[in-house]
Length: 349
Image 1 (cartoon, rainbow, N blue to C red):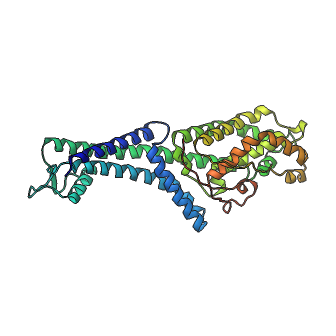
Image 2 (cartoon, rainbow, N blue to C red; image 1 turned 60 degrees about the vertical axis):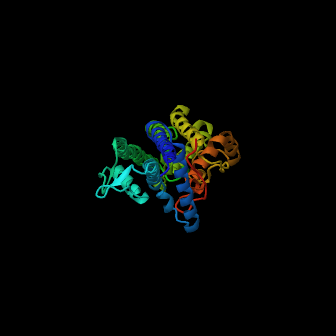
Image 3 (cartoon, one colour; image 1 turned 135 degrees about the horizontal axis):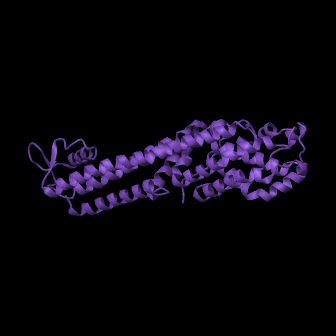
């Protein structure tokens, strides 16, 4: 055996320690772990392109978590395998006392990492006995860190779906929300104000969760009523109609809309910095249905001119959907299941 094998083994273990510290104990994700999860996403995206099944992307979050944890386990196993292979007499057969073969060392490291004992082999000498104890402790540490990594993300994914479901109760399209909120007995859309108050802190919390757990973005949902990106875009388009599409006397108080509008914009800017792909500005939402229902809306040319002032914001909304494998049709129509597009996205910093 070559004593120099201990050097790459220690380097691999140091890389693992850094990945765990960055991923689990700080806001972000390790460089190598990020590459692994991005690779999983690209593979699932390719599978989606071949099968055209939107449900494939639904598994991306769980598979990315398993992939990250498996990657840590492989680094740990490889690192200690190299360390124990650096000395011929490090491991010996318990019965015969002969030095262990390469595969026997592989088996010994796996048993030690799983804290199952030493099996049919034993470390020779005090140095390798200590190394075996450290190996077992690191195995336990990786398991603990993996749990600490996965549980908050799973919880945040559930909160993300809950927020999408909550917003979808307002309406399936921007026009649905405006029509549902309209109250002719009061001043226009005042019925929506009390609901918006509860959404601002939830949106701010989702933004922080995406910063702390970038892998959260891999948890997607093909159903309109549960997809947070779709329903956030639908809500923001509805607020655009209320703010810019109504005639002057019927516009809502800006302070009613401002907290949620600001929360959505901060959410979009944060996600854009992390991983959202570029996207084109979508067309303004249609006012035809509202005009037919008797709502006091401006003409299409005026509305389009006003929407131009929100070019960057609406471009970020389109990018939000593209990053989740969706086209703008998910907002413009009710046919969400068939609106998946083919973006490439990953967790980038």
